[in-house]
Image 1 (cartoon, rainbow, N blue to C red):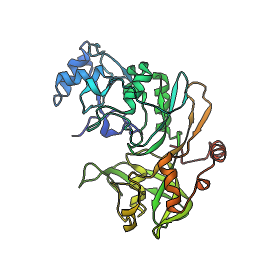
Image 2: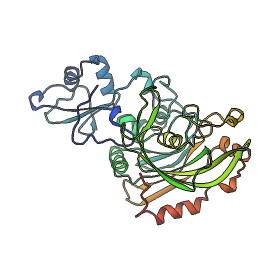
Image 3: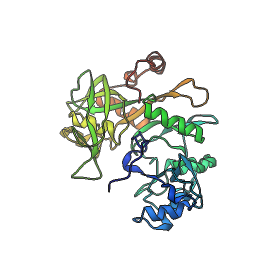
Image 4: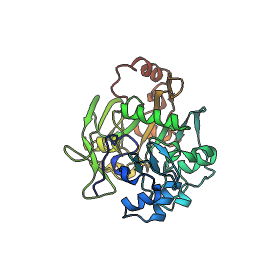
Length: 351
């Protein structure tokens, strides 16, 4: 279905065009309730479902969460984030352990473990990072998606930032749009990779498998990933490499899709497996070997540049000797933070 577009509906890293419906409220509907107008303009959804989305914080009017009974003035920009789940359960607080790296009155930085889904979706209506955030920080219920502004795949580990206020959320989304949030990943891949490279390939839904993404020269949205090889290794005579990847954009499955398109699929990736060697069958690792190890951004309130660093979790550490590597091959925190600060003005990998 072609979605109506507005001037401010440029794709951003978390809320892709496919994720929301954008509407402009005509002046002749001034004085009408929000839920009534949604029911009129979005007949494919029931009125009860639309109202539930409003109450769940999944509808924004001029960038703000409102109530279903809100009286429109006409001319507003409305964004609806369809929630394909039972809303009354999906947005319930749950006592889920969270590894909080940093928190203040504006932002929260989480070190997400592998296996934790970020946001409720089909097959994962509960037990997500969002549910855990609502339990630990009840005030997040007033923010769209509980302050989540970007995401990691379920089985990707590492650092994420979450907004704690509407002001912080707006600032973080703007930084994502402006590509000034720095995100660095460690990726273990199959193959004899070049020492460095940059992938420029659009990413969109795979036309043959709608559950997958695919790289294309013409379809999908522009995407760019930089990488450099940190060390070589091997498993059962099959070459392995550890790459540092930097995002210039933030598309769904971007690193996994881009590296597979080069013939370098991630170790353990159950979905993007083209050119995976036969040795992979005996590799004791069952998730994509991908970890977001460094995060940097401008603090929404102080405007100071801040950075965080986290080594991979234990499952990857235990994998290292099996692929001919050790912990000494991993990036050094002080060196990474220093390089982030030095390259702040000319590092085009910041996304």
